[in-house]
Amino acid sequence: MKELFIGSDVSKGYCDFIILDSDENIVLENFQLDDTSLGHNQLKKIIDNVFVKNPEVELYVALESTGGY
Image 1: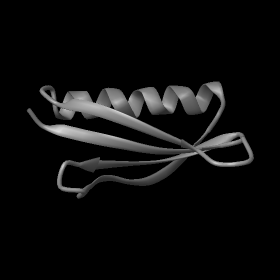
Image 2 (image 1 turned 60 degrees about the vertical axis):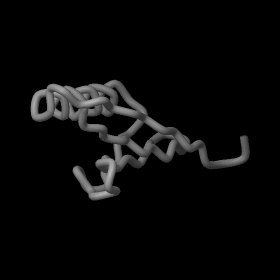
Image 3 (image 1 turned 180 degrees about the vertical axis):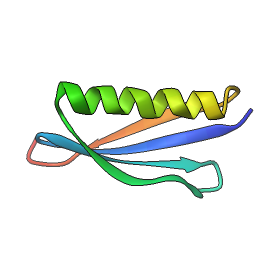
């Protein structure tokens, strides 16, 4: 089964993302989404599209929170 990984750097008000395969090749270049309903919907569409293009994929998500917390 193919594995893909979403790396997420969470900041106040937005989040930076990248999608890599198991060989660390870039599947989707870095992108940034705001922490708003629009940004959440865009992320859902991106993730849905990953599964459309790769129906057998296992998708893992890692989050890194930056800042003083």
